[in-house]
Length: 211
Image (cartoon, rainbow, N blue to C red):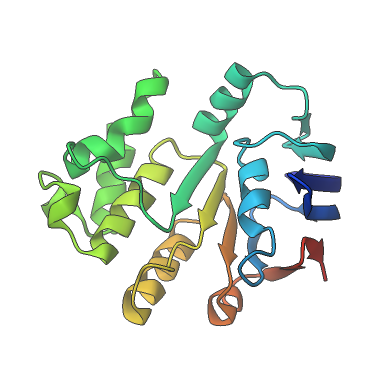
């Protein structure tokens, strides 16, 4: 599903990623592990089509993404990629229900049965009318997971999804992600060894290189 070949990326005069190549198959649960500053978030942004490639090639589901325009990338992101971030990125002025439905603004397919199943399985039905500021960190992360899954993406990119949570809530979030990974490729970006060990495979990144 994901193929990266000879990827390098620089920022100003610093090389962030150095000649990286790897493949992630459909349905794999992979951890991208490494210390802060290793280049993990930059790589995730490239995989999520949020950042252009400077050197190298990226294929997603057999499609060469290098020369896609912004509209084409946005369309793929909305249909195929679900993002989960450490800081949730929920809109404070919207209710939980409205936050979950946000991706529907960019598609004509609105599966309300899928939405009902998501909020039930994530245990957030009782929170739908509340605002994000009324929720705990763990509750906000569950809402963010629901939003990332609302369009039933084939790939989930989770960037330090437990970094802002205590250990108990962090374990719960990882359990929820595993529960909802059916027929999906899940890439978890983390510097937490115990989180990485719960994945099928670990890609170790250090100083911009795979080790």
